[in-house]
Structure formats: C-alpha cells, structure tokens
Amino acid sequence: MNNIETPAGETLLAAVQSASALLPQKQPAAARLEDLEAGAETAFQAFRLAATPTSTWQTYARGLRYVCGWAQARFGEPLPVPTPPAVATQFVVDHFGLPVRDKAGRLTLTPVLPAALDQALVDSGFKSRLGPLKMSTIDHRLAILSWAHHEKNLVSPTEDPAVRRLLADCRKLALELGQAPKPKAAAPQDALDAMLATCDESLEGLRDRAVLLFGWSSGGRRRSEIANALVEDLEWLDERTAVFSMRQSKTGDTGPKPVVEDAAAALRAWLDRAGIRTGPLFRRLYRGGATLGGGLTPHSIGQIVKSRAELAGLVGDFAGHSLRRGFVTEAGANQLPLADTMAMTGHRTVKSVVRYGDAGALARSPAARLLAAGRKRRSPPDVG
Image (cartoon, rainbow, N blue to C red; front, side, top):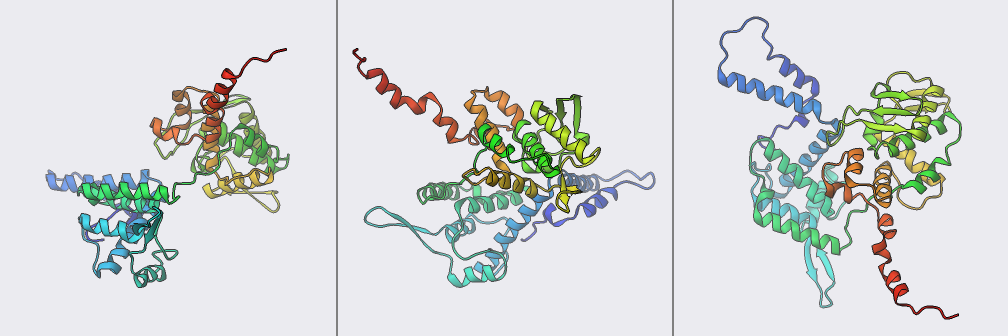
C-alpha cells in the first residue's frame, strides 16, 4: 500500500529500539524542533504497538493485505493513497454483488467481480473461498482501510457521502438476505449450572469449573481476559472473596472485578490442587490431566466452554463469548440496573451492552406476554 507504514509491519523489538535510540549517550546540543517531532512520532508508534494487543495488529495487517491485493489484481497497480471514493465503491460492489429483484419482489445478487480475478485472489491466498463476502466482512475491511488513512492524517474514502449511502443500503439488503450476524449462544444461569454439573473432582474438572465460574461471575470476561489472568492479579480478602484486576482489556477497562462465593471457592480449589502460586491462573494439562503445562490460550478457553456445553447436552453454538452473553442476559432477566451491569462487564456504551442481551430474557418480560395478559383480563369470570 503506497506510503502506508503501519505498526503492524514493525516488530515490537524494532519499535522499542527505535525509541531507545532517542536517548542521548551524552549531553546533546540544543535539539532542533523537527528532530524532536520526529523522535516523538517514533516513541508514539512504539507505545501504540506495545499497548495494543498483537492479535489486533495481525487483524489490521490481514485486512490491509487483502484490500491491497484486490486493488493490484483489479486495476493492475497498487492501491492509491489517499484512496479515491470510487475505488472504495468498486470494492463494495465487487464483494457484495449487484442487487436485482424479480417481478415477485424477491431479491438476488448478481456477481460483479470477474470470475478469473476471484480465482486469482483465492489461488494467491488472499481469499479462502470463491464468491462474495458477507457484509460484515466488507465493513470490517473498509474500517481497517479507514484506520490506515487516519493513521496518516488522511481523509478516508468511507467518509464520502455517496460511499456512506452505498454501505447503508448494502447493510439493509444484507439483512433481507439473511446475513444478520449470528451471535454465539448465551449461557445464562441455568445453562451455566448445566455445564458446571459436568465438571468432576479431577484436576481437569476443577480447572474447568473454575474457568466457567470465574469467567461468568466476574462480569462475563472475554476469552483473552481469562487466558491472560495471573495469580498476581488477584487480591484475596477472605476465603470466599477476591478482587481481580485486569492488566489488559479490549476497552481499556481497568476497574476491579469481584470474584465471590462459589466462583472464589472453585478458583481456590483449583489453585490449591494444582499447586499454582504465581503466573497464569489457568494452565494446560498433559498426560491425561496429570501434568501441568503453560497458560491457556483464548482459543482453549472457548474450547472448554464448547466441550462442557456439549457434555451438558445444551443446544446451540456455544463458545467463549457465551459466558459474556450469558452474564448480560441473566442481569437483564433479573432487572439489574444497567449501570451496575456495565460496571461489571466494562462496556462503554449502553448500545453495546444491550445488544449482548438474549431473546430469552425478553421472552420472560411482561411485554412478551402482553397478548396472554390481555386475553386473561377480558375473559368472563367463571360461574360456579
């Protein structure tokens, strides 16, 4: 991508070394303003890279790589920067398709991206499969392109009014075509209890019980937050009360989270049996669960939730995020104040936390039973 150098392309070591090079070995002469500005920019990039999760930079790099690969294949030259709105429009149309309605009003999409070009993108490893992309993927790729522009203080093509209207129309059509995002199944209290019932007193059972209760009761922690938790992040107030402080969170949430009652007891039982005193809170198990390994990965956390849900016979697509959705769902069902829920989950906006709710909680509300309530009110009294 022309003139776009992102932190994703720079290793942490190189960034830190660049910043360290700014430190004088001896008392320097008066620094020039332009040198100070260049040094400040280098240090800024080093801090940005270190403070942002590696997975985020990797995601940005993959997104930019795809857009650049598409542009090279489509136009025979590198993606221009700043990127014209017309190029962004072509990207959307190529990957979404051209909407067509028949006489009955049924909607279909006609491919626009040439078949040979689509095949070339797959053969080159830019795409995993032939065909259009989901609207959520298109939005994500363009959001990364927009980020790259903003990193260089350039105007993003997605800020063009025509491009914004096109994206809004495509999102509406995507919903009509059934492309609405399908969230992972929520694990409210009853589902959580069913998963806990599958955990025996083996070392693996103790670990999985602690993972489930810790992740759920401390506010629906994300997979990465559970995997990155350290023993040093816990402050024990008594045998059944601890306070967990996160070192890294997607939203920058650093507020302490309580771990109490059953969750605290399960956590202490796991740590005592495993003999863990420092380092990662949750570890891999080898040789049939008899040998302790290194810390779990976010993927491993998701697999624990998934496997326990399967053992419990739960229906739905369960994963690590099910704990977070389940906590919010249960909070809504119990009519907890939204501010209290957000303080636990770390959501920054009401819109964000509300969308994590589950239809099950809404189904239990009086509003969902309005029809039955009205019929009951109008029914004639029984005559004995």
